[in-house]
Length: 210
Ligand code: GDP
Image 1 (tube, rainbow, N blue to C red):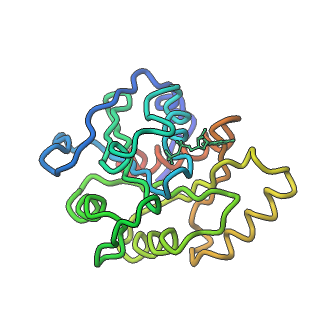
Image 2 (image 1 turned 120 degrees about the vertical axis):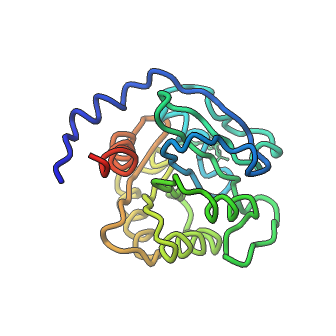
């Protein structure tokens, strides 16, 4: 299958609309139209809201440093009317007890179990910290349940160029991932990596249907 990447990029990288839909506490509140969903997962404070804003090219779509309540819900955002970003609860902030499946929140586990329109998971890891036990468990979960995922290594602007390379290879080695797993250095400040994340989003949300 040949993807006209350039055409796709021009189609999707122009964000015509980006809107908050709902903070859901129950599956009954999940949107029902079956649009492709891109899921964002990671530890609290890893830069999830900032990455969502940077990808959507909006300053305040997702709340950076948001209120604890909202960060425990599942936040849905509509992008261009043909795609959704789904912001899962951040983990590691409170000592939420883990579910049997190894997913950090009951809401998140329910979402992964029931949702049929998940196309890609963007798993965020802060470049400055080794992956936590929760991060590794989350990655194991994604692999064992065969969810396509991309690793977004956040806040790369906080380190010097040589530190970035050092940390990136240390991080890659500390995770039990296949060499094919997309591993993208990102910064929501200088927008590094946004095109690569969008490439993955386009491919998994739209490319495979072509
Ligand atoms: P969340 O809890 O995962 O949604 O994290 P936020 O997006 O709220 O970010 C947590 C903190 O890290 C905030 O102070 C952000 O300004 C900061 N931050 C997030 N992404 C970046 C980044 O790429 N570079 C820098 N320098 N700071 C970032």
